[in-house]
Image (cartoon, rainbow, N blue to C red; front, side, top):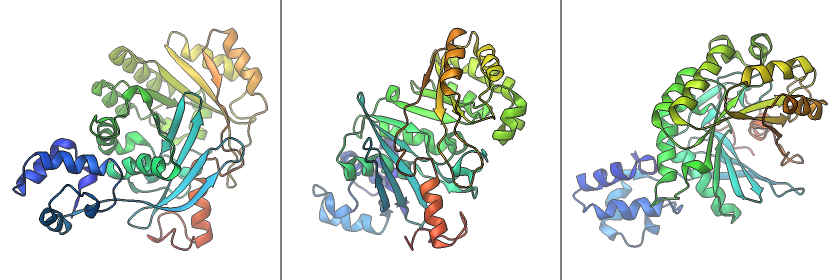
Length: 354
């Protein structure tokens, strides 16, 4: 069975033509899929005979809402979706004055092992398909009734560890006959896969690249992020400079503020020195609490920000959204699996008991 939602516009047209159908049927089906239909029967302008023939050849992905949390403070919505194979992922809808942003997952679980992140607990199960990433945008918009104008690939998983599927998703969601969300309205966050950053630079996409930096020195960063042992701070910053030279796009550096770990005055000075001459912006992130982690949110965010600003670093503090719900990425999925009594990736029906 072919996953037709993961097909590009060109691939879908070719698929339809190989069935002896005219090319315009590919356009019709593509547009229906990107409106969020869940069955071929909803494609009312297709001949019945074609719909019946396709029933035996294709499937249309559509996640189910397992749990939906809505913040009473700011309207942030967090979704736990069940996929066709029973695994679960998370998506978050965030409301801003400039429009609504959706933060999507790119994998079921994550193998990067960042010690402060709930997504990494239990490791990676599998990659998401382009269609499953598109579904998060489509069905969050449909269920919430809120138009989505911005996308952030910062949910469960490492986007550059699922490179080909993520690139295909970006082209699908950007397509003018689909959701038509511009690349400048999309941000991709990576923990720092140097080869992936170099590949992304070659794509010449006008998206915003966010680097999860979280520490300016190898000793601290290696303790927080195992990827630093393979691609250390020096190698990562060299890749960032190459990315800027190739694309002309400024980079956002994400920095989760962890009490007593990466929030000292000395580390602020190291960070300012590290970013000197590197066009970009630092986004300080007040740490969300994770039950399984011993880390605590920093009490020095304001002082850290001021010290960076005095040294000419462009820096902001991320607004905390959804603080009254399971705000930390991966936390809702983790709680769901704990309720079901399984570890991540051990049971394909991990969300069935929710």
